[in-house]
Length: 234
Image (cartoon, rainbow, N blue to C red; front, side):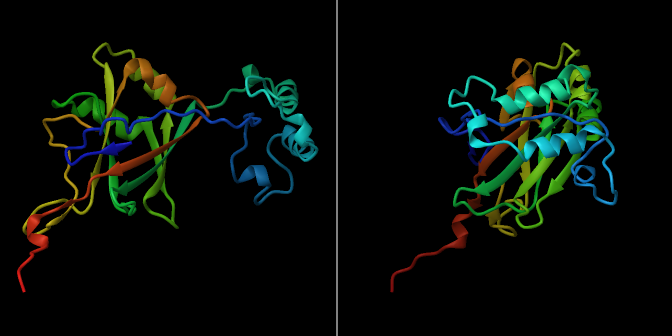
């Protein structure tokens, strides 16, 4: 997705693509990315963890289906061991975002803006930032890449409001374009305007899906004032 100077989506740059790979997935109660490798413990929190890991090490290429419309056998084994309907996991979604300029240079300092209207809506937006968005993790090797973690239970409550018809996602990036003091930088969406990626309420479940990771690749226009370069005849 590419945004112009006003953060309007450039035509034909917004593409939705589903993963073509077949993977097995299961949520193990009481485990997280640290405990599942027995970090600081000799045994896992969940007795199924060791069983699942041992069986995963026996998976072969033949266990994968060539027809991607079907689940391969290992997923069926996982579901038998740990039925999805029995898992009481928090409904979370992860968005991995990488922000670059039009030259492919990473934007290392930015803030994700979320709102439903161009007008004043402070109470609703406070809920978005304080409760819907649970955590932001910046990748230490590339600050332009960040992981955003969302609480979908909060989103479900917000969707009960009939005024919630769409969600806008835009960016406040540094440095701000303010010539002549700052002749190179990025422009923000004005407080009384709406821009960026607009998600109708009917599409929110597609983007923010439980236990799903969405990869968001965004290009933001870096603006350069005419005063930066001057050409003169020799």
